[in-house]
Length: 261
Image (cartoon, rainbow, N blue to C red; front, top):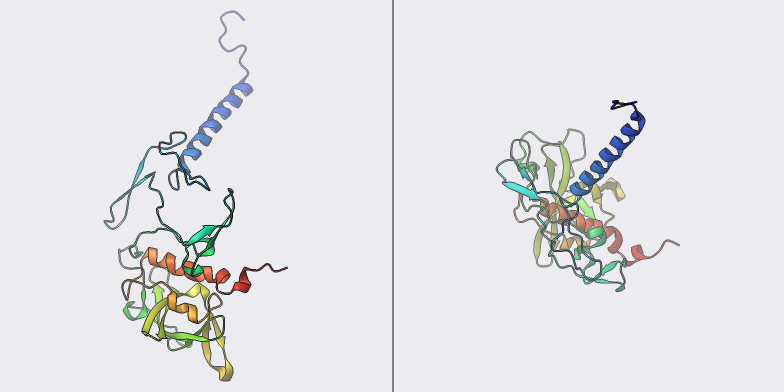
């Protein structure tokens, strides 16, 4: 029709094109956002990476951290420069690495840990979130419940590793997070934290209660990473402690590394 502006426009087709444009923009946005951390990627064998990436790289976003902890900008393109006690099984891409030395401290596989901030987690009020019961005002063991303090801790070999000294609680979520365990070693007494998720309460002969840990043997408790301060645990220390016990589920006993069939 002469002079008509919309006489030949197919509304359904316009809507379809609009959807395609929106969907393409959504994909571009998501591909940018997934590069805020862990980017640029490294080649599996050579560890080469693109020093000047441009495709899909988002502009820096600044986050204001709570409680005066400063600012955080991402992406920051900071590479993980840690060295690990491991070696590649084969030089070809896709092959795994195996630990060298003490596999529980190698930092790979089930024992891998993230480079978290070396400061304690805090509550909404800025107080240390995870602390021992002896300094957690208002927290106590429920009357009638088993008090683990003074109980023995057994490794997966059923040998005694140490004695529970205290309970560490999460003041934000009101949960037990760790057990503080004293280890009587040949070179003196050492104190470590045992994550609650790796503990099962058991009863031995004569009805004696104990804490059983399937992840590691009694002797392997001696190498559990320590905390720098006696009544505080940092985010980085938490990751390393959990990684140690996680690695034990595979590496504590050589039998665990063999196939089931």
